[in-house]
Length: 238
Image (cartoon, rainbow, N blue to C red; front, side, top):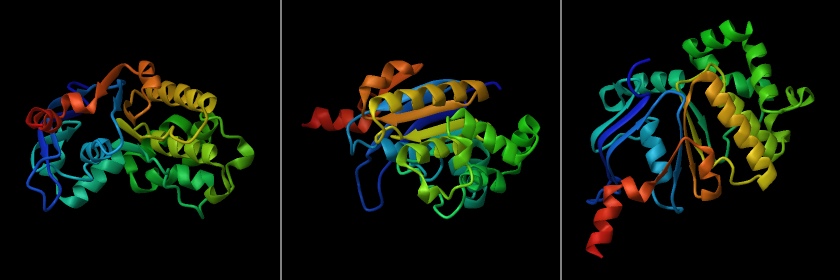
């Protein structure tokens, strides 16, 4: 593809009822296959920015564009389709459906996205085979694939959430503090798997954390406060 996967231009965002912007970002571009580590303290706006990048929230002004399409130019249904087609999201709490099997949780995005289902089937032969491939790639044993998600450990749920995000090779993978729970060895193993998998699918990765010890694993590192002009303005006024 030509151009960035994700492009932020003159973004301004304020919560309803607030007269002051909490995010003011002039520019941010993320390229295909690039991994970006975004860090900052809790409460600094990282999760809000991720919601803007994924089109869940819309900016007050400016634009956030995924694959050349601005979220603000789409109707709600179009945003939903564009998101499920092109964004894999690893939530901090994983957000698996507890009553569904591991396999069915992994396949879920493809049930709503024909383009991702098409890619998954082309690469693996079937949706089940694609789910098994990604679960195996994440190191989850085959004996666990048909268990309901509620029966898994935190570390196992984390791996299922990553497999769900990666199936169908979305253009962008967003990870919101997914390594906050595992111990250091499991964290590093999970990062190895996630980074290598995104390279294999050529997915751009935006990974948010407050843990700067892992920053060197990524192609780029950004402190949110350094690019957020709202924070800079606040510091100047204080």
